[in-house]
Image (cartoon, rainbow, N blue to C red; front, side, top):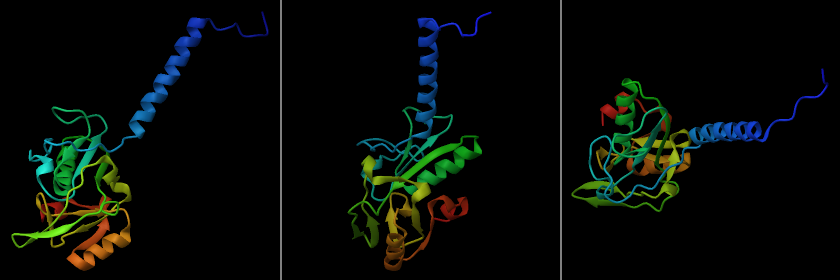
Length: 186
């Protein structure tokens, strides 16, 4: 019996290396979900409205083992309200959210304007304008509206959220703390 291990054949080495690369690629892809730009004419996966035709914050969600109907992930939404409503409905159906991104108003030059007696906030659809809900503070129940009425307005800088709430009313809370009741009452 020999004291050394037999040399790997070229085929064994190539198959083994390919397996390791394949596994690490799969693991990396599932952990590194990135926001995408919302393109002109794309519809909201919750309500069906054309996203770029409405004001206010938007969202997108990747799910662990499920994909939206009719297009590649992520699911995309015309508003933060639709984003949360979709997540809550899909969670009841057994879907598990992997990552949710919302418009980050700390990184945009947003505008508010009065239209028909309502204060509305601008929309921003480029991938660079989105941030993970894990890092966002939102202003809920303010006097500012988006695509679906009263907007849930996200900020990566909590001081920006506080300033927004001082000017437009509402309450600040972590984006991850939004509840069905809060979204249902809007």
